[in-house]
Amino acid sequence: MLWIVRTLSVVAALLICDSGGGAPADAAETPRPNVLILFADDLGYSDLGCYGGEIETPNLDRLAAGGLRFTQFYNTARCWPSRAALMTGYYAQQVRRDTVPGVKSGGQGTRPGWAPLLPARLRPLGYRSYHSGKWHIDGKPLENGFDHSFQLEDHNSYFHPANILVDGRKIGPDHRWSDQYCTVSIADHAVECLQEHAARFSGQPFFYYVAFTSPHFPLQALPEDIARYKEKYRAGWEAIRGARYERQKRLGLVAAPLSAPEADVGPPYDFPEALQKLGPGEVNRPLPWKDLTPEQQAFQADKMAVHAAMIDRMDREIGRILEQLTVMGAAEETLILFASDNGASAEIMVRGGGHDPQAPPGSDETYLCLGPGWSTCANTPFRRHKTWVHEGGIATPLIVHWPRGIRARDELRTAPGHLIDVVPTVLALAGAGGEQPAVQAPALPGRSLLPLFEANAPLERPPLWWLHEGNRALREGDWKIVAAKGDEWSLYDLAADRTETVDLAKREPRRLAEMRTRWDALTEEFRRNATQDLPSK
Image (cartoon, rainbow, N blue to C red; front, top):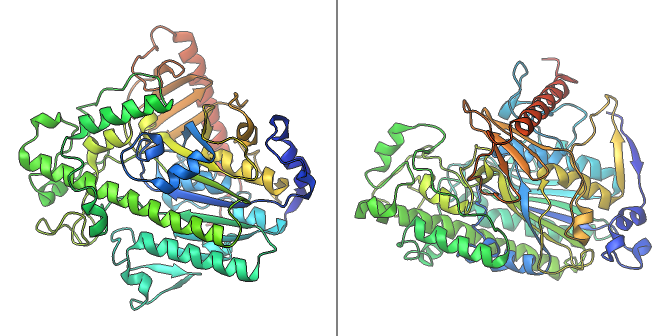
């Protein structure tokens, strides 16, 4: 495909954020930054230490202390739609990577030709691009702009993943990465690619996408990591959630009331046979901790210990990647973004090799899921979970760290943002003003975050839109309408009620009607986008 690339100068890109003093005075001589995206899977809003959690995450906390934390950043509520938004800059429905009625779309959908992945946009600008970890995007990494890829395609075992492709070729069972805890393997590959880049391509900037599978189910972790959290969660989910909320208030992350657990909301998909396999310790509702049997309390506490261990290990492996940046002299010149693909998951299922109730919790022989009790805790202070588009399903931490380019340290940014903003942000810094493919592409719906690197100020933008599994929402300014599948719309003033506790739909019927009209219009617009450049088969 022929692309006409309109390149802006690096000076202009950096001057976008210079009004607040963030870009260095010699911006004209400053090289384009490297970009490192660290992406977690099923991580809750409050799971990191710097977002109020008790889990040890010193490396991510250090990035936050040296940069910015966004308090109102969003994803799409699900894995593959979020990865499409992150890598293309479009809503997933626009590029057929979430369900569009009447169009082949969703997890098996194929992107239009006018929606390249970010590395393909960066390659003409001199960037080398690398991928390590989960893929879950249509197409193959090396055919979409990446120079190296570690593609983890087995999501049922952290200890013995059966399907790993390196640069598109499947590795054998005798390879160390086939018999190693996969969070470690993902970091191993990242460090090795960075070492090669430093040795052979140090004159070029790099883009790196590290997509961890942690802490997505099955909950499996190294025994030494689990041991650090073995007794931490015996107090139960209400106590841990309350402590997280109090820390969040002290950190300035939230001011809204703590939402109440929804005792009637369980997993989004019903697998009753899984409950039988998991045994009497499993519960599929966020019941009061005191109402659980001692066996249930022990089982649930063990699950959360494994969840914490997975996040702890991910942070440790991120530390190894950060150390490699320091060793190669790239730490000051690298923009680092950390986020999650959706909120914590209430799902309960058993897949892969099944579940052995006699095996140690978190071992390779077990298949545990977080479930709605601990998911409610992980998503503190918000409501609902992964797949829903209430705040608990779509709110993600966003840590931004770039020593050379951001003077702010340990500051919060409260303007709403979304994964669709990452592509325009990176393109602005890389010096790319945009591209015009052979088939006219819709304008990118996101906005560059560069102004927020300088100041905590409003970001002018169109409404943010969501649709997944029949769950739908729209945020316009501080107002949000939201509805679970089959439910009526609710209306919330997020300036006062970010936790969605007071429904104003009956009090503000005109506002509700206007926002519903805008949601309908955007839905139709994105449906039209999805019908552009349809595949021939």
